[in-house]
Every structure is written in C-alpha cells, then in structure tokens.
Length: 370
Image (cartoon, rainbow, N blue to C red):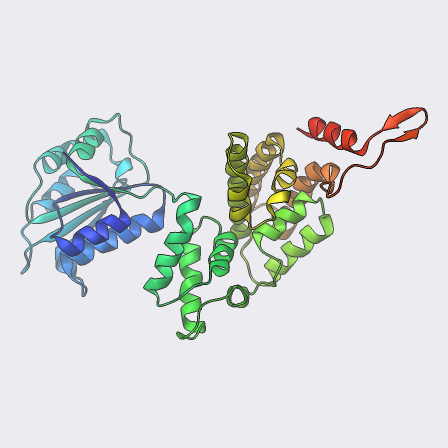
C-alpha cells in the first residue's frame, strides 16, 4: 500500500532511511514540489550532486520508451540513479503505456520521480501510479499553516522572527511561498544574527512605508477611502513592487476574508477572526459587513479580468489598470461606511412627524447591504 506524506515528513523520512524507488510529487504549490524534489535528489545523489546519474524529462515532450530506457539504465559508479518526469499530467495514454511496468515493478537501482500539479485520476496510468508510489502532497498551505512554515523557513536561513514580522510577511507576500522565501533570504543578509527580525525590518527590505501593506489596502477599500487606496498603490509601485504581485496579494487577502466570513457565519469565534486580522474583536463583524458575499464574488471576477489585462499586453499602463480595479472595489463599499456604535443609542427624536432611531437606521442599512 502506497503512503502519503507532506514535504516536511519526506525530509524527515529521508534522514532516517534510504530513498525509495518510486515517488509521485503532486500538488499546486510549486515551491513545495521543488523542495520535495531537491530533498529526494540530495538523498540519491548526495550534496554535491551527480549529473551522470540524473536525467530529466517533461511529460509533454518525452517519449515513454525513452523514459523507460533511462529508468532501467545501470547507475554510473554509484548505487542509485534518479529519473525525474516533470509535468507528468501531460503524458498521453500512448506514451504512458510503456511506463506501466516501471510503475508496477519499480527498478531497485533507480529512483523514479513523477511530478505534477494535478493528475487525472481516471487514467489507467494515473491510478497505477497513485497505488504504487510514495505520494508527496504539495497542496497549497492553509492560512493557519503559513506562520509555522514561515517560521521554519526563517530558521533554515538563520533568522528569528517576531510574531508581528511573520504576519507582515504573510500579508505582504500573500500566498506566494517563493515570495516569502525571497524576502527571508534578503532579511538574512540585512538583520544581524544577534537580534530578531521586526516589522520595521520587513518594511525597510520591501521598500514599503508603514501602513502600506495589503491589509491596510483592504481596510481603506472597506472604508471607501479612494484617496488612501490610490496612495497605498502608488507607494507600493514606487517602491518597485510588481503590479502582478500587488494583484496576487490583494486576491489572496480577499479569499482570506471570505473564508473568515464563512467561519463566522457558521458559528466561528470573533476572537479568532480578530487574532487572524489583528483587529479589535469588537470591530470584526462591522468590518465584515463591508464585504458582503455579492461584493466578494464581484471582486474575484474583477481580479480575474485585471490579471488578464496585466498579462495580455493591454494598451493601458499597469498602474491605470490597478487604479481602475481599486476604484471599482471602493464603489461597493463607499455606501456602507458607518462607525459601529460605542455607546447606548440616543433617545429617539421626532422629525417631520416620524420617529427616527439611530439603531433602527443602522440595522435597516445592514439588511439592505446584505
């Protein structure tokens, strides 16, 4: 029976025992896939590497027969060789046929690694591979897993991070693990080893001013503060932030808000959401009221459209494309800007023969907004 483990478990296992003969490294997170492959290659070839006993193929280019011949080849002055097949999901049924025997009867002297973002489980070859291989799950990390991953990566490069610095890296880089790793490597060359990394260090290395993170941008959108929204965008662009990175971070933040909003709707605790967002617990529900489901759905469609414009060589400048996106997002929230009540409601007052209550007005507005 094949086993399934994550990248961290794989590295731990390889420190205790020799590498296996067949692996399937699968999942949408490219950094985790690359890290898993690097760990397997080190275990097979050693730290120095051994190009004579390593061969790489791509599923959309390689012949199944060529891959099979490489797998059965004898190692050169070594105990094992490694054969890697990237983009394995692009192997056609015809080209995968010669590989079935390699999968069901692995060659003991070869470590065969198939890598894929996602396999079609309906195919005969995929089913045989999943049954026989040690599967390394490289699915995107959940939000709750990111701080632990960042802390572990920081230790790898010799850093100690304050909690606030971890949150800032998470917010500024979104779900981009490669982005976080790049920032950590820059911090390792900047921060002395005798002290912890602070939020200010992160700001300095990213060229950001305090108050210009993706969370600050989201707060400004929630308040419909068009001027502040455009100012935060300008500061990030002037600091050299890539337009696609800004878009990706904002999309990540919106998905994060949607998940937290659903958690609250299903009975989740406001304190947990407040801790995740680093907000006053008393303001959490008011904050989420600014982001009804209709707004979140529209935002994700806008993100997709903007991504296409930025990647498709739109005639508009990237800054104008992003400004247009942010102003559209503000349109949905500007009419919802209300301060949460911090004191008992005032005594109802008479106006034009009707009783007007501040509390009733707010509740009515909220029902309309939702």
